[in-house]
Image 1 (cartoon, rainbow, N blue to C red):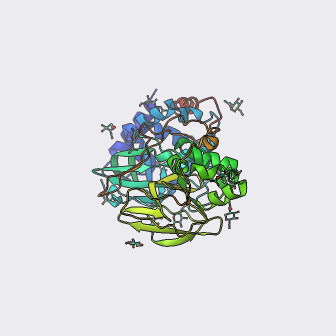
Image 2 (cartoon, protein in one colour):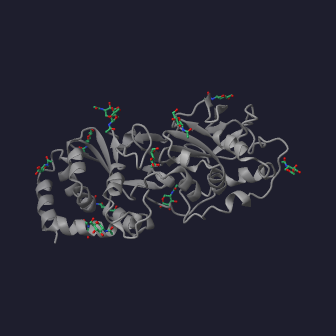
Image 3 (cartoon, helix red, strand yellow):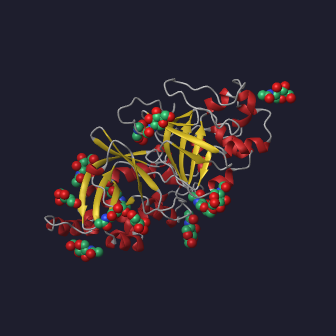
Length: 385
Ligand SMILES: *[C@@H]1O[C@H](CO)[C@@H](O)[C@H](O)[C@H]1NC(C)=O
Ligand SMILES: *[C@@H]1O[C@H](CO)[C@@H](O)[C@H](O)[C@H]1NC(C)=O
Ligand SMILES: *[C@@H]1O[C@H](CO)[C@@H](O)[C@H](O)[C@H]1NC(C)=O
Ligand SMILES: *[C@@H]1O[C@H](CO)[C@@H](O)[C@H](O)[C@H]1NC(C)=O
Ligand SMILES: *[C@@H]1O[C@H](CO)[C@@H](O)[C@H](O)[C@H]1NC(C)=O
Ligand SMILES: *[C@@H]1O[C@H](CO)[C@@H](O)[C@H](O)[C@H]1NC(C)=O
Ligand SMILES: *[C@@H]1O[C@H](CO)[C@@H](O)[C@H](O)[C@H]1NC(C)=O
Ligand SMILES: *[C@@H]1O[C@H](CO)[C@@H](O)[C@H](O)[C@H]1NC(C)=O
Ligand SMILES: *[C@@H]1O[C@H](CO)[C@@H](O)[C@H](O)[C@H]1NC(C)=O
Ligand SMILES: *[C@@H]1O[C@H](CO)[C@@H](O)[C@H](O)[C@H]1NC(C)=O
Ligand SMILES: *[C@@H]1O[C@H](CO)[C@@H](O)[C@H](O)[C@H]1NC(C)=O
Ligand SMILES: *[C@@H]1O[C@H](CO)[C@@H](O)[C@H](O)[C@H]1NC(C)=O
């Protein structure tokens, strides 16, 4: 029973020559009826969006919602978990007016209205990565999931709507992201050092996360480490209090959580931290950003410098050799699916993470068995009455 939509849509269409308000804009687009329903479930959100100015709404199409509700992520959002759903919707609202023409091939990290500390510990709001790839505009979210703009620049009185083909993934905590990204050595080492809670609940962090190959390359040095030594090494990979996306990394020295210095070098499109190269930048997490690197950093070797011309760097632990890392990784669950590959850097051929298959969307609340589909179906009934 769609008469209510149809009559309102007809009214809105009649006024199409002028810029419409948000509700009229959403209702006038046949691909956005689901979003209209869901936002209407949250009267306070709807009111604040309707009265806001200078915002950009990334509006998932009906097809995007259908796919989301069928995904494990969609099903994992609890039936009654209105805060989770409100958080997801808030993440789709950018602070500022961003027409497609303002989005460049160099990624920008745009703050959203997702501020609820249960879902984001990023000062100023969790961000999305906006990047132009060829002729399309892409938004990368948690777990490097990508959403493509299918209809750009729909103006409304408070700003702009871009219709996207996939619901954004709210960035997850560091430990879960590490698991899903196949960084099981990092996940295992954090567990062994008992750092998971401290790191996941910190605010505004940047993590340089070595991939498993990096740990394997120094495997012989890992077996004899005390917990204190392992902790010191891990804390040397974290910058506490700064979220440094690729857009802000520059030649500089920064202080890691253990108090020692890290040297950042930006050279010809590549980013190095000490002698390690960033191989997958900008994996957004609930409290900041993770950059995957190809070498484990050594707090006792802070002067390790890169050789940007070389394709691989020597290890930062003198005398270490390759050995199994099963002891670190064995307790870590296998990813349910692999994360995205991230955008291809402008003018470069990327050497991204080995993962390839589709992005694993997931939500912070993964416990409820009943899907959001039930709630949203209820919304449809409620709205149509
Ligand atoms: C939006 O515009 C429609 C059509 O002009 C109007 O009926 C509605 O009251 C407006 N809504 C708000 C919140 O201003
Ligand atoms: C709805 O989405 C489809 C598929 O992306 C597209 O072909 C169509 O033009 C869209 N319709 C509107 C009104 O935007
Ligand atoms: C939703 O909340 C209602 C009322 O609090 C409760 O009766 C119902 O069991 C809850 N449903 C689920 C799936 O948690
Ligand atoms: C939007 O950004 C401006 C700064 O550019 C800030 O003052 C404002 O608080 C932000 N709004 C929200 C809702 O986060
Ligand atoms: C719109 O928001 C952006 C980002 O917060 C801000 O830089 C800009 O000044 C705002 N513009 C207006 C007209 O408020
Ligand atoms: C944000 O930090 C608070 C306080 O440390 C913590 O309780 C909360 O779980 C964190 N949020 C996320 C999404 O990790
Ligand atoms: C949308 O607004 C921008 C200015 O923000 C304007 O340049 C553009 O022409 C408008 N587009 C439409 C279709 O009205
Ligand atoms: C990060 O820094 C803040 C402020 O200095 C401090 O309160 C917090 O304990 C630090 N977090 C960790 C995990 O060290
Ligand atoms: C680890 O300890 C064993 C036994 O004490 C020793 O033989 C080995 O050389 C040590 N390995 C490293 C890398 O220090
Ligand atoms: C950073 O420093 C290196 C030398 O250490 C230099 O080659 C490079 O051009 C610098 N990068 C920038 C962006 O200035
Ligand atoms: C973008 O998302 C689609 C669908 O989830 C996936 O197949 C594709 O690999 C992703 N692309 C990148 C560059 O991550
Ligand atoms: C979502 O959109 C589909 C059409 O794609 C429609 O059949 C369904 O009723 C909509 N659901 C809601 C809750 O608006």
